Length: 358
Ligand SMILES: [Zn+2]
Image (cartoon, rainbow, N blue to C red; front, side, top):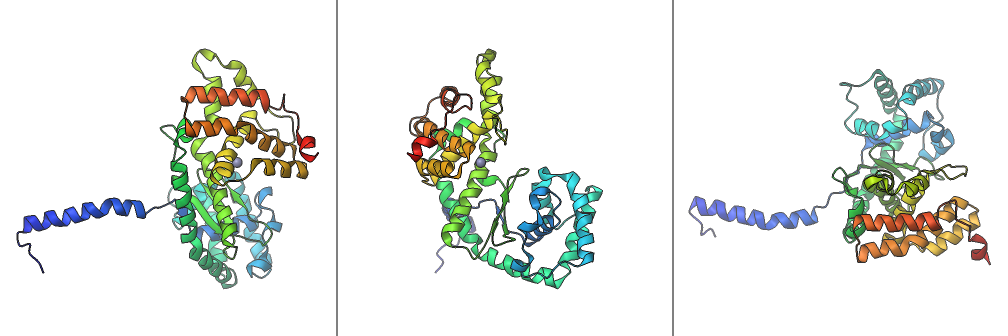
């Protein structure tokens, strides 16, 4: 039955219906920046077996697990050529290379090395014994992608409740965590699943046959890396203490710029950055118990990790307070940094591991 005969009224009614549905669509049509592309996953596989960097050692790719036969001499020559073209681009190019792969490897305005990379990917993709087992793996990954997206939806809702702390670190140029490209690729071995945050994006290997709990844990890893990239806490700490008004915080600046004399030699500002991100992602959003994590780090004998988890326990009340009753940005940073410098800094921290074991 159509009672509307006047075309103007009809148009109005249609646009009203449209407006009514629009907000609903915005709420339900949540899109994280999850990227699932066969080209990216295949490129990632070639990147790893080429072993261009010591971080992509060949042991972490298990051809038997992937259902791929041993490499021929010709395959090895192609991979050596790939590795020498890939090396000068370094780890920082990773996200750009993934985006390039996703677009289908266009060669416009690309340096000469890209042609070598593309030729290697095409060479292996043309081989059925490589393409087919990996395509099947890709298909399984595509099946679980909506579940991963649902996990991100839950995380997004939780983050919305943390604006008191998140706002301290967001700047005009900050990306929201869900705007950061997240590349989902299949695992290349049963023993290792790697991930990384090189360039402006993140990638993680996921085994599609894993339990839902393990996959949900993997989403937590994505979130952790995305928070580092979106909030850049280290930059905020350095800006606040080293470029503060009138240089009033110079001593704190020096403390944060100090390098801990352990085998990793990280800056103390990076340690505070890590503590903040662990507290938000692993403890507040994922309900990990920092005391248990601290004891675990003590048992494994990892001193820096033990200091990190001890730091999480020490700074947790200040961070929680900022979520529940936010102070001004300056006051919060001042408090956080002062507590860190007086209790967690490598110059004052004494390992409470022995006490934890007693
Ligand atoms: Zn981290």
